[in-house]
Image 1 (cartoon, rainbow, N blue to C red):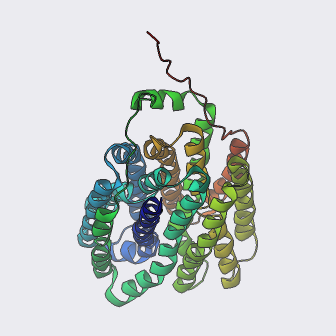
Image 2: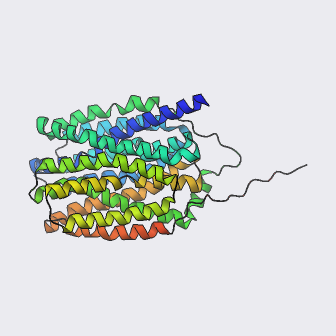
Image 3: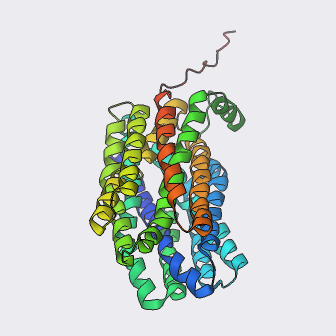
Length: 402
């Protein structure tokens, strides 16, 4: 028992370090939009499209990396993902063409993120801890991603101001290589297949036949749309409205800091109350917060309050959403099923970041996308109200007595 507890604790610590590094680096990309686009003579739509593709590739590849992690363990997937992540940042620093930026920031980093973030690591954590502790453990690891955002954003801004965007990306590539040895040490234990386990094909068919699974996917689309639009475009939005670039950096850092509290709290609450109902209230409150931010007078203080409020709601969806998947379908194929749900999150991320750049270049402002984000909050709240987290009842294999 003591060995199992030590193994689970070590896995949570290593998984938290990997996620905090990967997510911390990723959340600084929005700071590069203005200096990179200005120096290379691009509109914001070019860099926004590269990051939109990154989120799309991340999502499309996530079910496959999740399935591989379910079968072979998370360590190998994280090592390969860390290598692709570092190479993507390096090539991004050398890119001066639209194609180069699209391949590096979009394709390589998207593949790297799919192997180093939530679905792969939360699947390993879900298998390692007892069911009654699963939601809280997922909350702790998810909160680590927020800590990385809080801790690394000021450093990213410092590198950007000190070295310029290209050299700063090279330094970030060096930091990303830390993921490789951390992943190599993360030895989770995929469950041995038993006679009662569903095959991968049967698991997919089972999930496809569950209305709640698709409602969960659609709800996570909204989460991706909102958080990635804000993460990438908020610094530019604040700058356009006369606020210093340091205000945008501070707001994103506040998001990361307070999401440590929000995500851990959501994981803890998910072990006590209904996860779908918690998600309904979370999205409704998000809609209220965004509405107040957009339609009330903008100032540094209101921006900081927005960062704090959004931080409490930011990744709080992750342990609750993955917890529902684990509760309903079990943990045998958790990384793969979580990866499918996360694919919809990334489809939303693609639309949020791309539409932000598209409408900005078209109209010179972000008003339309803010309004879409508010409406989607109401839609997501309604969707989650009708989701059940009751475990599926599967017929047990019968034993024939001779």
